[in-house]
Structures are given as structure tokens and as C-alpha cells.
Amino acid sequence: MNFPYACSRCGCCCLASVCVVGQRVYGLFEKEVRCPGLSFQNGMASCKLVAFNLVPVGDGCCIKARAFKNGVEYDFVALPADTKRQIVGVTLKGGCTK
Ligand code: SF4
Ligand code: SF4
Image (cartoon, rainbow, N blue to C red; front, side, top):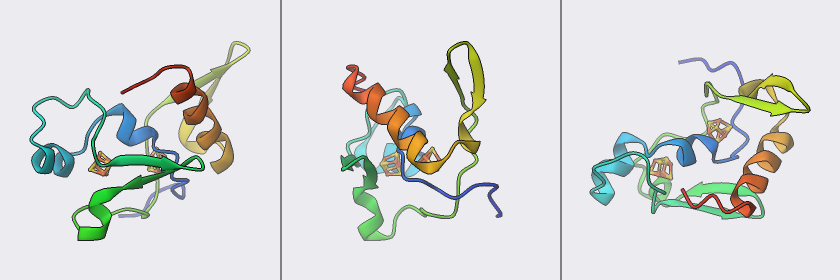
């Protein structure tokens, strides 16, 4: 599958919902929880399951999400990589525990 944008490792997709593999491995019955496999280091998201070749990563990004700044709407997927990571970082610092 071709993706329109490269993955910036912002972690937004994993924060939004736990993937099917994560649900199975961690026995999660709902997607709206923080995935135990997700971690951040210097703003870069990592998945513990990558080491076991359980999840495909790095192919690209097609997340459907919007971002707003000063009343202007942006298509999240098309934002620069560092901006995506910055937005997620601010969200996490703001107390988002998901
Ligand atoms: S860039 Fe897209 S696919 Fe990569 S971690 Fe962020 S939301 Fe997920
Ligand atoms: S951290 Fe890994 S297991 Fe968890 S939702 Fe993301 S890709 Fe899936």
C-alpha cells in the first residue's frame, strides 16, 4: 500500500486508538486506552512490539485528523514531521494520559 506521507513517529495514531495487534497482545477490550506498547523518547514514538516483528511500521501516514491554530483548520497528515511531533508533545504535556 502506498501512503501519501512519511511517518514522523509522532505517535498520534497510537494515542487515538490501540491497533488490533496491541489489543490482542495486551488483552485490551477497548481501543480508547493508552497502549502499553507505546512510549516516547525525545518526542519520537516507539512501539515495543516492533522488536518482535508484530506490527508493521514506517510505511507511511494516512491518519484522518484535523489540527486547529488561531481558528485555522489544518489537515494533520500533511503537516511537517516536527510539527506533528510538537502537537502530540504539547497534548501529552497538557495531561493527556490516553
Ligand atoms: S506520522 Fe502518522 S503513522 Fe506516523 S506515528 Fe504519526 S500519526 Fe502515526
Ligand atoms: S504502540 Fe504498537 S501495539 Fe500499541 S497501538 Fe501503537 S502500533 Fe499498536
